Image 1 (tube, rainbow, N blue to C red):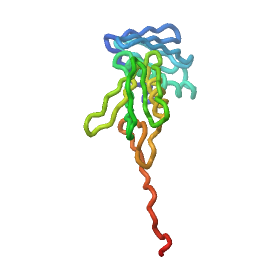
Image 2: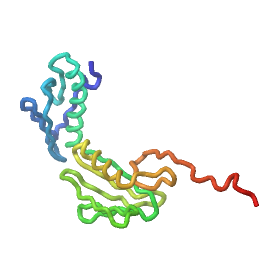
Image 3: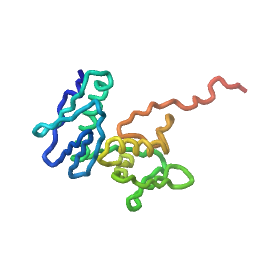
Image 4: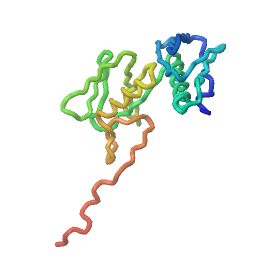
Length: 189
């Protein structure tokens, strides 16, 4: 039995859920998302909740049970509250700006890196406050796409282990290495 799959998904009052065969559509104040369900899974609507059930007891249907419940829950959460990923910029001369809805990053390259937002994804830049670094906030209704866009931005300049310069997630721990130890055991004159 799936522990996650058994949990019901609470649907807020401002979210509309449409079930049509093996397709589910969720519409809320932040946007609309859809999902094609696997044939081994069925979704049932009760008053204010959705329950996900497997059609049989095969390994595949048990494997998809918890996954489908999580995907449906993320859809409901996304259209009602949205999702955010926060990246921090650390390094001398590393900056982020907004030009319209486009994100412009200065990351030590010979040119600025411009990133156009995908449909449904928005960027915000929080300038550095005293004692803090600049932050880039990637927001949207689809949790998977928000995470993918944030990961692609982070790959432009991943944090390096010596000084910690680069782009990292908020709260990400970077294991630091010691640099060169100097001239230990060198020739004496």
